[in-house]
Length: 292
Ligand SMILES: Nc1ncnc2c1ncn2[C@@H]1O[C@H](COP(=O)(O)OP(=O)(O)OP(=O)(O)O)[C@@H](O)[C@H]1O
Image 1 (cartoon, rainbow, N blue to C red):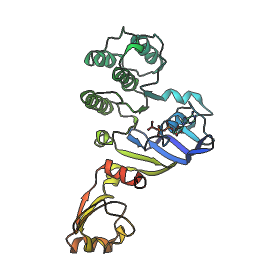
Image 2 (spheres, rainbow, N blue to C red; image 1 turned 90 degrees about the vertical axis):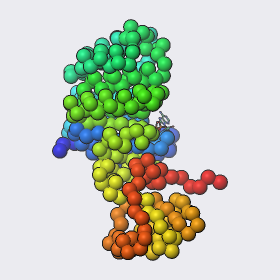
Image 3 (cartoon, rainbow, N blue to C red; image 1 turned 180 degrees about the horizontal axis):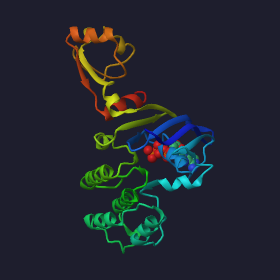
């Protein structure tokens, strides 16, 4: 499997505040990634560096093995869309679509028309006059129809109602099945993408703290519950606090490998092990100190 985007030792600071600290990530070809992180962690900054809209202090970005600073041409393989991508000029939606269809070699005009009808988008309308949600729909149509080898959606469902959010993910998956490519979804709405993404990258405090497949992650993410006196015997929970306590019962969230000794204790005592969902795992790994 070849690497579509290679981020190697990238760092970025703004006004002496380190946002990305020596980050390295391989985004593989034809996989769907979830890029996750709390507000202000640097997801957009990273995407801007990958798309050369921002220069990093050090490190390199390669697209299909080509350094973006040495070969501008490789950026043609990449499409990034976000709600605020387009200037607030009086350009019509149709003109915007035409611009993109001209730029992307495999742009799917037929699908664009189908999606415009489906979302009741009048392409003669000025982009500026669209609602926030409709602007997101325009961006998403461009991203899907671009058929770019690497397509990046930065918060694609901002402003969309629940129905349109579901529809977007369905259409994206359908398009991906017909034409597999590397898709990076940067989002806060983790529950929505959990069944769509194959790999997860989590950025926290300037570092990549998780870069793994959903399958591997689900084998390491657990709710562990039982009697306090039994749970105290587990080494993996040492120095951690329970998430919930009810009388003598406790529930812990745990991310990591469980050693053989702990597994034996779990089996022999009445300790319950359940797979934790991605959102809870994310919150668990990125939680801040107690609010006082
Ligand atoms: N041009 C800039 N000048 C100064 N600071 C910036 C600039 N761009 C981003 N930042 C700061 O860098 C940090 C990371 O911002 P970024 O937009 O990359 O975060 P994010 O993870 O995408 O956040 P969110 O999820 O809230 O959109 C923030 O503290 C932001 O204020």
